[in-house]
Length: 355
Image (cartoon, rainbow, N blue to C red; front, side, top):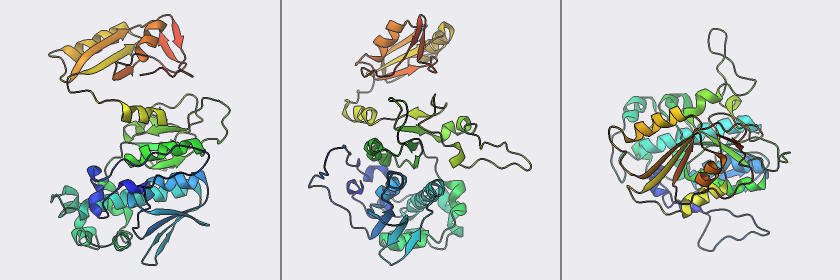
């Protein structure tokens, strides 16, 4: 995956300096196109030969442009001779990998302040005095030398200043999930592994995604949730992780699939002002309110066509979801047992004709 990154320095923390990772397609044999090569950064990520380990360390490996190798226990090896051993238990491994990745990414953004695009960082003024090094001095060092310095930083020092991650993923430990890895690495999504490798439902998703904005909804998910207050302990991030086995998928989480990402890559991005948008609501009153907010006091800039439908029939739902000319469809109707229409619910299982 890391072959798409052309920058060894902390500048790789700029999203424009990270190319889209090469996609993965499952087949009967391994076939890696000749232009792709394994980067030599002096860093190796060691995983056990399991889907779970590979997935949990995939985003970190991508960002570091590290060679992924198999071993008896998860670890990060540097060409300085140092090896950072990682937890072997699944959830503890996820927590540590996510902690390292977030911390190292953040420190890269400080080290690049005197780089290609000199910039001042509010976070540097807040964190700099507590660091054992001057970040810009590390910009020209090797990856291993830089990571050795980063490992001296207590993650709690930078935790209050870390950016909110837009996407966090939960994958099922099956081969089909591998096709999602490039797309998740592209947005630097931490990956967790949950769910049965052999689900009972044939249409069970291989992956779901959450975001920090949904944390409040997901905090109530799972038996380990506890309330804050005297004598109470806030639930850990792991305890709030939903599972692809959940039915229905918890509020605040969404099903992800390789087809959806590929569709986004292959569709032509509409020009400004030509975006086609449709809203579906089971409540006519809400539909009128949304329609009014979208056009008053003036129509929103950038939208070419807008359709707000209240109490749609089953046929109207099918027609809207199947319309290839629509760029965005927002469904505000209940989806617990399918999309609720005026004349019944429409199940989406097995439908391939979405835009």
